[in-house]
Length: 112
Image (cartoon, rainbow, N blue to C red; front, side, top):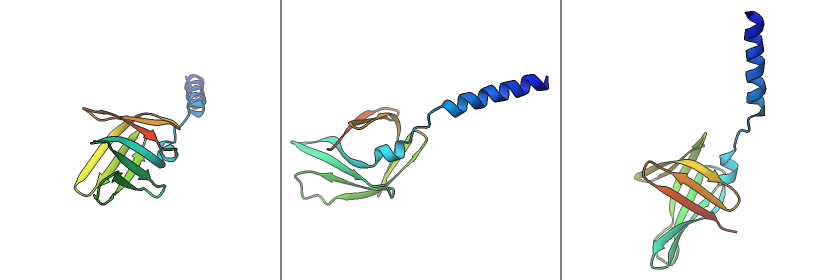
C-alpha cells in the first residue's frame, strides 16, 4: 500500500514538473491597440511592468486614463477610477491578446 502511494506521488510530481506555467504577466506588458472607439479613433493601451497602465483614445482631447492591472493565473483584472473589469485570458502571443468575460470576447493587437 505504501509503495503504491509513493508510486502515485512520484508519477504526479513528474507530470506537474513537466507542466508549463504560462507567464501572462511578461507577455501582457507592452503597447496594445484595444480597438475602435468610433469615427476612426482607436483605443491605445500602454501596459507597464509595475502594474500600471494608461488608455488613450486617439484623435481626441480626452485626457489619458490611468489605471492598474494585475494577473492571477489566467485572470486579468483592470481597474480604472470607478470601473473594475475582470477577463479570462484565452490566448496571448507577440501579435494579439484574446480575453473573455462572461458576455464578451475581446481581441487586442500588439503595437509594433
